[in-house]
Image (tube, rainbow, N blue to C red):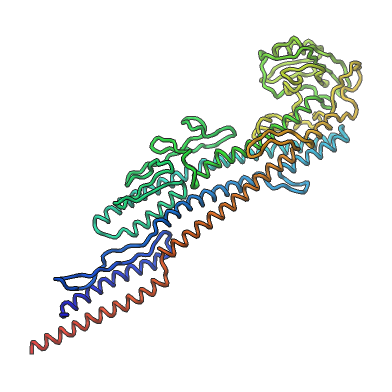
Length: 586
């Protein structure tokens, strides 16, 4: 080998080793960077005139297992979905609380139990004002809890919808990043530069997309990444991005749902004008859609089922009774107009009794309503009774004692709209807005004066006498019926996750709470399992493609020794050149 070739080989080796050392140093400094893979400076032999003249770095590459990366993308989507689901179930479980064994529990089931106990106490002493106050207070607490829990569920739905918009923005940003990286990779390839670092960045951005939405992807022959939804809706075609769009609702209430049509209900998620909401079944967005449109809706349905059944049971009893002494006026909760038509059964008779302030009857009349066909007909019949005033004010029927005493009613026979008169107009409703947990509340008249809680019934005796008590002394018939209604079995229709059942109100509430608790526990286990699976895959990927700092440090030491050897060759060749020149000059 000539000195010139030796010198050339040593210099090329020195330069190649410098690049190798730079790559290894970059590996060590980026070892903790997410998505970074170990790079290798690949060498090739340089040939001049058929003879080896040194080495050079031909390329800088990284070894990435594409199949393992695909599995990581799938696991990322699953883990993100399960984690989101678990978080929302945990929030839902916190709203419902835990079933308590003590009498002081704040969960709905415990509150129903306390209400039942209060009714049992009132049953023993129906004239005790303090016991009535306790019943009304417990009923109000229960209704308030139903409303606040319902509002909490709708707030979670609103939160999920707004999070969808945040995730859509995140996906769009990641798609823009990948599009830009595709462009940079194409440019680097055209220059003959390494694209390994750019591909790492692209893979990291791709995982961000997969975290939020289930996708499929492939890299074409030009090293351009293409991304599609699970149903092949294009999100990224090389450098062309099809952005997602979603208009989140400022608030969502019970009954508002995603309808799949623009302009109504909850907005869908669109790509290039196509609604892909139902195509998204994975990632955090898929989980948020499921919570917003299914899980939380079902929880609300269960709560509504409890509230409506409670209102039906309670009002069904209280409308058959009267306060002791009776109130001076009764205002219905049912919205009516004087012109509304009525279906009144033949032989329908309503007893109306007027009392003094102590509850003694001053007069009474049994009114035949059989011929009534409108609300106005009922008004006319009631107003024909001396001392009775009947009006429809602000859409509600009000009947009162003109003299300021009390008034009590009882349907002796027949029906209006297949129920008794008081129930039809809601004249003795203890609960209002009972069709939904979001609107249920205690009648404001009871909240103002708990003594107006019906505990007994107006006598239906044919020999009722003026001066008698309208409600018998210590009549606890309504209190007893209320206790039996709440403590006994009620037929609950299937709603949400719960099937139809015949059980008590407290047991139904307990079933609702325990079912959600079980689902929350399962969701947490699923989140842990999927997180562990993702961790296993990422560890495997790191072991195969990541940076082993110990190996890289040892390699750097080895390269430094190679560098010193190449430098020694150059130094020796320089000395030989000097000696040769000295010999020639002498």
